[in-house]
Length: 495
Image (cartoon, rainbow, N blue to C red; front, side, top):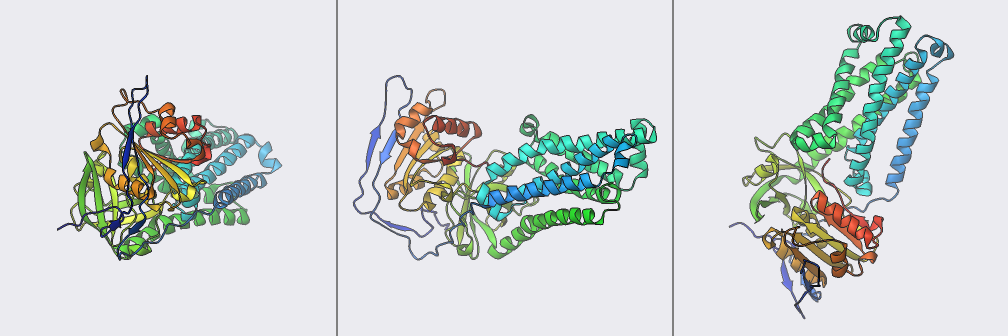
C-alpha cells in the first residue's frame, strides 16, 4: 500500500488545542468578486513524530552579489587593458589599422562577456542563494545582446580592416581567413552557434520553440566557446608576442571551464549518487497536475529551503538526456521528497507517467525565493496554478513567529493544488487564507481587491508565484499599494 503524504511528513501527527474555525465572506457594491476569508488561530502544540528533521537551507551571504559585480568589472577592465597595450602607433597608422584595432577591442570584449554569461548559468551555489535565478536571468538577458553585437562587430571590422591592409575586397579577405588562417574555420562555426543561440532567445522565437529545443541550442554555447578559444590564442594580435596577456586570458577561460565542470557536472553527479533518489509513486493532485514522490538516502543531509527548486533528471528513455527545473512542494520528509508538476510540455506530461523505481538525478537546490529574503515578520503569499507549490513549501519553512496570509487565485476550486495542506499549515500558524475563485473575466483580482483582503500589505513581504501575466499584475498591484520593491519576491525558474 502506498504511503499518503500529509502536511509535515509521511508520519506526521497533529494535536490541536483550542482550535476555533470561522469564515467571513467579503462583498462590496460594484466589484464582481466575493472572496472567502478563513481566519484561524494557531494550535497550541504540534508534534511531528520520530522522523528525521532535514537540514535547513543555507542563508545567502549579502556581500556575494557586490563581490561578483566588482570581480566582473575588474575582469572587464583587465580585458580592455590587454587590448589597449597590444596596439602600437605603427599598427594604428597602417591601412585599416583603426578598423583592426576596433575589431580586436570588440572581439575580446564580446568574448569576455560570453564568459560572464557562462558564469551566470554555472549554478554557483553562493551566487544563486544571494541573487536568485530571476536576477541572474535578467542579467543574462541584458548582457546577451551585447555579446551578439560585439562579436558581429569583431567579424565585420576585422574583415574590413584586413581587406584595406591587403588591398582586396571584403569577401575575398573573408575567404582568405577561412581557407588560410589556422582555426578560423572553427571560429566561424562558433560564431554561427552564437548567432543561433541569440536568435532563439528573442522573445517571439522563444515562445514558438519547445524548451527542449531551446536547451539543446544553448548547450552548443559551450562548443562555441571551445571553437573560438584556439583562434584567439593562435591568431589574435593581442596575444602574439605577449606571453603575459596570453597567460591571463588562458587563466580566465580555464577558471570559467572549471566552474562549469565542478558545479554543472561533478557536483550534481556526486549529489545524485549520494542520495540515490527513486520514484516511489505519482499522484494526481488537480486536473493535469501531478505530484512525484521520490525516496532516497540521507535526505536529512540535503540542505534545502522551502521555495527552492532542483533541476530534475528522470532516467527513462524519453527523459534522461536533459533536466527540468521543478520546485519542491514540501520540505523533505526523510526518506521522501516531493515535487509537483503541471502537464504542459512533452517533458512534464511524461513525468506524470513515471513508474515506481525510476532513478532520479538532481542538481541543486537553487533559488532565493525563501524566507531568508524577507525583511519583516509579516508575509503575504500569493499564488495561482501550480505556482502554489513553492509557496506551500515556503509556508512550511517560515519561522513560527512570522505572521502569514495566503491568497490563492483559481478558476475553479478543483484547480487549487495542495489546498488542504496549505489550509492546515495556515491554521496551525493562526494565519489567514483567502480564495479568489472564478474566471478572470468575471472575478477581478487587482489592487482594490488586494487592499481589502490585506489592508496592512504595505508593511509586509509579498511572495508571488504563478503564470507570468498573473505575477506581473500582482507585483504592480502590490507596489501601487505601497509595498517596497525590495519586499516583493518573485523568481523565474527557467530561462
